[in-house]
Image 1 (cartoon, rainbow, N blue to C red):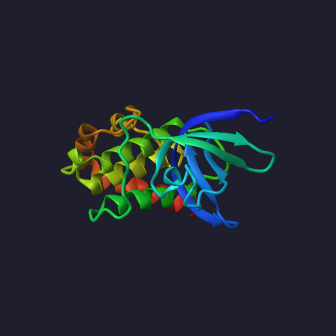
Image 2: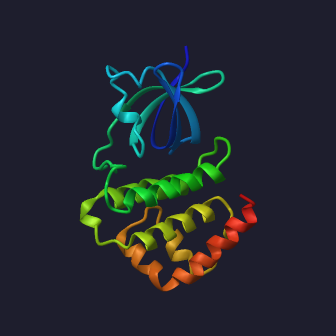
Length: 197
């Protein structure tokens, strides 16, 4: 019998598989980026259907099979608001671009708490209407910078350490980003160039 693991996670990408299944890429808090089969979730009767939609952030229950993980359960996380991909603001596009970056840069399973918490707090900031005044360009720049730093593509210096030390992003951290925007974008471009991706 396989052991069941429960972990918070952000769905990065999902694609149809077989008649009613999905293959889902989830960036998890405990295992990093994993792929999991979600059996039968494309059926209208599936209880997991809602939990496997694009941009979902959930508490996932998973079993590690011989070749691939299997999704066996999911539930909403208290205090997390769903980010609707059909939202007319630029929030879904910002989140989608950051998820695309994760897909390009992360290979294999490896826990990275900073990457997970950056994704998690990005989702919460973008989906919470109380944060509608947040500058989404500054937020996206900060999220990308933190992810590249956490993955080793950008080196630290004293000027940018305050942007990295808090594990989760918040509006006051975004305010610190504005005067450093050109420096951060330059570091991001250099990190992406050196990644050869």
